[in-house]
Length: 314
Image (cartoon, rainbow, N blue to C red; front, side, top):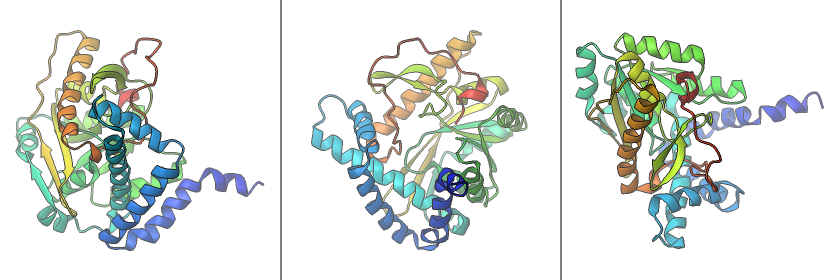
């Protein structure tokens, strides 16, 4: 029993390690085939993923969408999430220069370089849509080093394994913590680029905002970092465009509304950022790789409180 308990607790780490050593060595086309098969089985048989994604798609597609359409797009979401993991397990074997030159269409990079030339850091805000991971990795080939704040993973061994994959091309990835947020703020004050995602309230400390016609909780970390460091907030939305190609559209920058009321400034500017993402999402909802339920089944019992920056980032 003393042997089995640690093994059970770390099963996700051992599984990911095995996948990296086996599937991660295969060509990307093979990985995508395995990902599609696996995603369909989990979507059909899993107790939570199918219902969660269908709940999300009912909000995104609207009340006029048929059950068949909701199921079709939800299945696409599950497959896209699996493709993301198929991408990640091969990051360490990826030729970043070849990807940048042949499979990445990067638009709006000048918004980042112009902000840095003017003496500002850049908060690059994106979402779990298509594969923002590949877009960030592609920035390394453009000479831009990114500090990314990511979700803490359990067990810690899994977090260290993922960090090793993600940092192989020169970027910095840190799980959200008080110290990581302080480092991100210093990075921005030194005209660096910080990447952060805005569409999942992983730590359950976000604020309630409108998204796709209904209220849900979202983190305010991207806006909070920009406000605290006078950084330029640049939305960056990514999409897959057939085969293995990724299109990343950066900007234009979102000018922040600053009234002096911190809570209101966080709310208003984060809402504007979500409104921008909603337009992007609705063009192709099937590329949203979120398997958690975003909107609650019942209205929240209490009003949300704004989160401190070390609590809101993900």
